[in-house]
Amino acid sequence: MRQLRRDILFVSPFNHDHGTERISYEVIRAAMDHGFNVSLLYAGGRGELFSQLTLALGRQAVHALGPQDRRANVLRNAFHIMSHLIRLRPGIVFAVNPVMGISAGLAMSMLNRRLRCVSILAHHVFPAYCSDPVETRRMMKYFRAFDWHVVVSPSMEREIRPFVRDTARIECIPNAVDMADIQSQLHEGQGLAHPCPPHRWRCLHVGGLRPDKRVDRLLYAFASLPEREQAILLLVGDGDARGDLEALARSLGIAERCLFVGHQARPWAWAKGCDLFVQTPDWETFGLSVLEAMAAGLPVLTTGDNSPGLKDVVHDGVNGCLVESGDVDEFAKRWSGLLHDRCLRQRLVQAGFKTAQRFSLDAMRSRYVSFLSSCLV
Image (cartoon, rainbow, N blue to C red; front, side):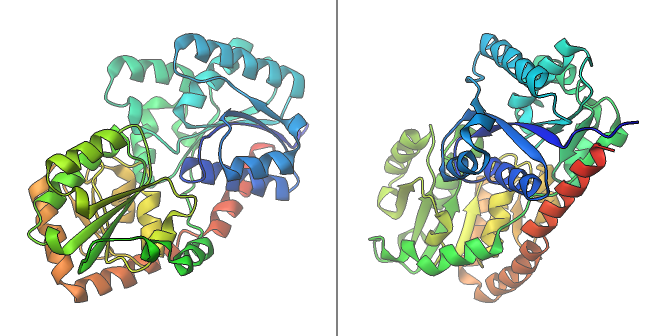
């Protein structure tokens, strides 16, 4: 059988420079570096990483999709993807995340296998549709149009099995941490220059300020800390919930000790001088921010005991602290204990740093290149 062409059509969001977008960027660059001809259909089109890709690929290989906020837009994007598949005839179509997967899966279904190519869906984000039975059935319909599914943790592989056509065609490739870049950010020490009230402990949260991240629980826990008057909480990131969270901090009487510094292109520059990384999500697909905190030399305290990805990374009391989701009192208790136990924090830092080192960018790039090459045979 004739080998498929080394052309890949990536379908991916690009809204910022971290998380899913950073992983997409690394996969695309690795494919380019190993001789694949890459085209990109994107949603969003923001951030420095997207700008770098546009320059590297050339504008003729980069095309915009519309938003995915309505069914009509999903259908419109599916036709857009289908037209590019017919024109480019790639050997591989690689869609990133469920939202992109709906349109790409619909496009593949409409083509009804008329094109000879391998279709891949990378699940860097998974939980958004698990709790809604109607949405779950809708997702399953489109996901089964894909030949392969890429997941980022063994636990996530178990979660996704009911959604795929062939469970033998699930590839587990963990996300990665750019250790050198995080160390470079640390040396900048931007957070140390930011005016802060007097404090003994400095705690850090890095992540989107969105409802699903449950930063409100973090604020409730901070407000209940006996040590709150001797601590500050730096919140690096932005999102739709920021206004509500700032109002909550004022109502809890902790506004002066909660510093919302907004989106930062180099967020780990704020980790210098911090004593602890804290977050309170219900669910994380992989917990990349946790690994990055470990790489930055911070002890980690997180909720998410029911998160497949977090349980694969954080081992309670060994390389971090993992608390039951929604238990604000227990979270505050563990938080207080960590602030007063310097020896425990140091042990967690040492073990956490070793954990982060196992998730190298070179290993992830190599895994993706090998996987993509095998798909063409």
